[in-house]
Image (cartoon, one colour):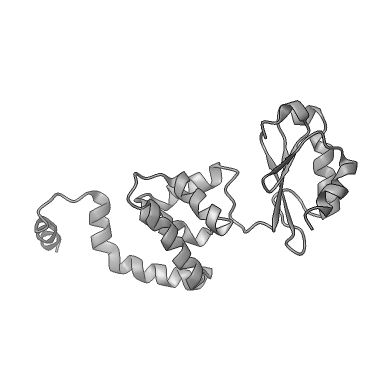
Length: 195
């Protein structure tokens, strides 16, 4: 059997790489597993198509896992965990490599955020000027912890390491809007703008 596979691969007129060999030898098996996985994990057909479209744009580039994950998140709002095998396959990477990048970068989200993303800067300057009070006030007001979405899906609360707005700390961002020199008492008025 091994001889047959060698002859089959030699007929292509080139020496195949390890990923090419794996792809050809296990392609039918992989397709069957993927089809089952979509059903088990619940990736909808429309989301599957969106994932495939986004990955097709980066398929011919050198493997850049972070770029692919950011493109998915930009389009979908998050990186669906059930798409990790597709991402790995499209980039010629392992699922462990993709999962490693996903877990390393705090800006990559595995769940869909609320309509508005609130990010409190936790940098040194903001910390020294009271970002902890802002964060506690937001947690109390929204009744969520960091990384969670408030009931109704309106706000997701998160932190960031530095907003680069140190001169007017403490700072927080709502979506792409940056606010500095905030006091906890100003948060009610600020949140009203986003309702």
